Length: 153
Image 1 (tube, rainbow, N blue to C red):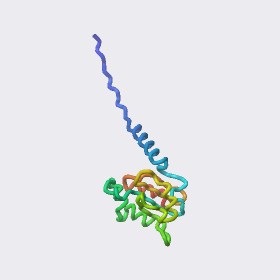
Image 2 (cartoon, rainbow, N blue to C red):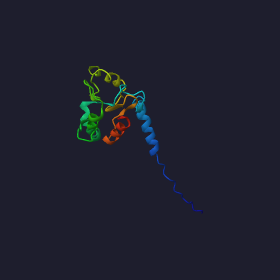
Image 3 (cartoon, rainbow, N blue to C red):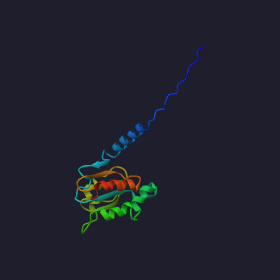
Image 4 (tube, rainbow, N blue to C red):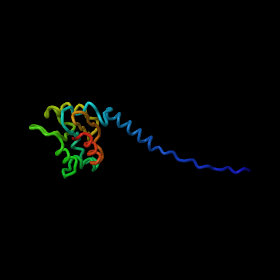
């Protein structure tokens, strides 16, 4: 009787397939607005940042996202925004708002920016008046600061 020689077959790595599927799902879940967008999500001159969150869910956020919203130490997301966002006599170019807030109380450009928010929270809108970013708040401050670097002057 002849011996059958078994040949090991390499396992398929489906990592890329899962990554692509996750990105496509994120794109559709967020209304197709994830990532760099033009026209800018906040269509007013100057570097501006809007974070939309559910304040009652802060305790459920991953630590990296929670720190981005609450930490104020030098090098933090909040400190960067306080330093780099445009300031006028009546307004700051940096806002963290609850998803149930009424942007009409703040006036423009926040009313128009609100229309560019996604369906999930926390959501990040970044703009320099020419282009910008609209997408879920990244998991880490480093990722968020990299996004800011693309649009801040």
